Length: 138
Image (cartoon, rainbow, N blue to C red; front, side):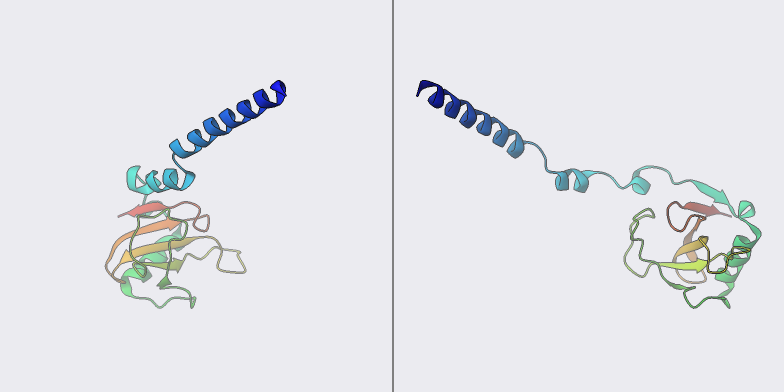
């Protein structure tokens, strides 16, 4: 009986310690909420317009002139679900296809611009279908 009482006391004490640690430690959600956005705190990589592939420079010129664009999706809202680009309200970013020679579909290359359609605040190039972006510098 003494062993049973000691075991129960030990388990209660352990539960109390574990419970206190759980209550006192920040939750994963809190940690994520307080973690800074990668692009908001770190400088985003950039690429000179002259360094873009020829097709990228052509797409950029079309964006500034208002088209015409080859794909129905060009000029549509980019949702920034990956949260790599700086946070903005929905509708701020628009995406455009950068033709990929030899590709049978739209390929992985895009330019995403924020702001007014023909006078964007900033444009970003991705060659890997939104996994990474580089800010286009003229």
